[in-house]
Length: 425
Image 1 (cartoon, rainbow, N blue to C red):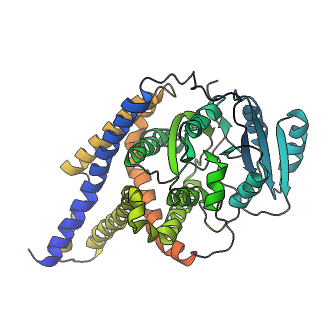
Image 2 (cartoon, rainbow, N blue to C red):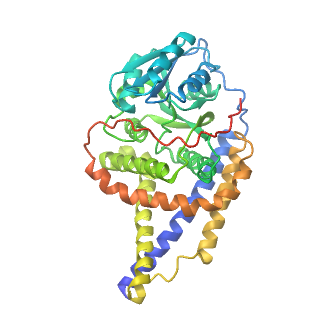
Image 3 (cartoon, rainbow, N blue to C red):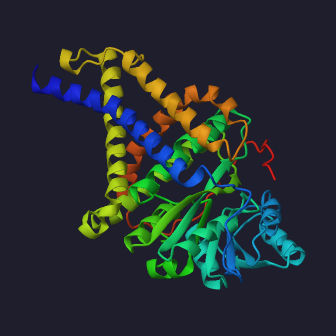
């Protein structure tokens, strides 16, 4: 076999074995996390914290959230945590958000409202809220999210137990699930995102907090320089910056937050492309720094991100070779005869469904009825893997072009069809 044939065989092996290996790794590490930290915890009884409880400021950056903000504030006001304030930052909204917030400020005595004249972006809104906050710890959620009444208590628990904990990421749950995309994302957040965060906690470093629900130690934010205003994913950026300053990030699955997600392909594409571009921006900015020995605990997450990006490009090349083989005569060593799953595809699908089963078994303590979504997850590799692959390939050049871009401002996302299931109390 010539060199070209060997390269193609290596390419095919990598495209197949990498997702298989990572799936097994996530299952093993996620199961260990569950057995070690979750199994015997009663989520209805948050652990005790010191008395008096440290003050918490809940920051809610808002841009054109008139259809959601009333529910969001009502759920925040129902928090069982003893001492907290709510700070809503209206970031240049052009709908009725400003007026609604002023009305809500009269209704809820814990609510403070800050108005920014122009659309400055989520990072700047968070910076503004953090500077105005009176709390020792900050809980940050999106303007369309519903925070579980015990979530703040679970988040603060980590700060109280660990003096080097700089941030805690919560457990987002999907509200809108009336379409196939909605159902797939229910499974994704349980079986992919939740399992990966558990596994990364075992590695020692977490790639990113969830931007929709995360808590921060104010002292850690000050040391890291707060959120960057020129990165499109402020959550990834602040996660890397905190950990570069040797602050720990924890995952708390009991801190539930119910969110809306895209339910159109266009909205999903735009969201995943933004995530991919933001990840690449952060990688280009901090990747070299992470190679230093003192940041060695980050090497596992750094390597996982790098190899995942390489896999996306490798899989794209496999598809390109297959399509080219349909229209032109390629050398035999370059030809991909079929993209129809054979034995390796069946094995990969089996391991994928096994991962979904394991993660849903873990997550059923937080949400009932997840097993009914397992059927829909057979479509996940076909749709979401292709989207992830395509957005990763497209994000590289875009991130290089935007390495020093202007301020990242808001754009109204796809929030689904709003036919959402009511979260449990």
